[in-house]
Image (cartoon, rainbow, N blue to C red; front, side):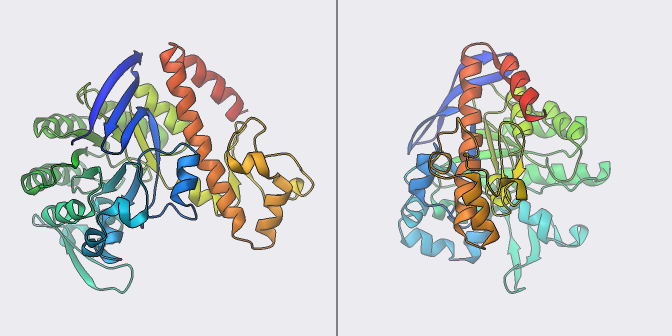
Length: 369
């Protein structure tokens, strides 16, 4: 079946809802861990479920190259291949357009995008149709339209041309979409330009997707510009379908996004910083390589219910990093993902109680201390 979204309660623009998928029903707003290569780095599916993970992401471009969509298809789809029985979202490869197409005026054409493999330099060509074909075979719960992630800064002329092309790509992808058990999200672009964001949102909604994402943020712009991009798009998205802000996972950005009406977020941030000994805490981010933690036998967070905080101390985790033991990154990945998921749980509770702004204020007072 297609996903279904139920809006249960508003607190201002903040939304509490439920997302019904083929692999369970989950509350929103939610944070979605990223498993680029059919694996959230260092963690097992069982560990993900233990931290309260619902939807996770995998990357169409990377799985296209390794192991190939046909291998995943033969395995019975992405869920069976990676042994994750929760919902999965696959991105479209659009961000790779942004990051791997070097000469954008030349390599990004109406038909698709020419770029080189990051693995072996092989010439590749990705089109909206090919992106959808790959995602249909991966058999994720949610597939994403193929788009161009507009760089920042970009001229108005470039952003307009790109936004209009992304809309044509969205229609082409939707026309060849064949998986009846999979949902397809449209992506709003437009760069930093208010009129282009409005145009992109309105035209994308006309194509009647199962959900809508706001793309092209968190690509180097300042926070004021980023939040404006969200504001300029989200007010034109329907109330009865999920809204997804792509590539965002900083705690402050999650609060700002939820306040604006975003339901879904994803980011590699919690696992990436974990591999560098950084941990989220209620009082800000800390680095456990710091010498002051050498004899600190307390957990990262005293009130955190994750496996890491209920079993290990800062001193031990610091020792693992100093000694070059990979377990340190695993333990911090568990904690960091759980930290963000707990944040979302608390935000849902606050929205239900009509106290979201109060929760946000109290969180920031501690976090920014």
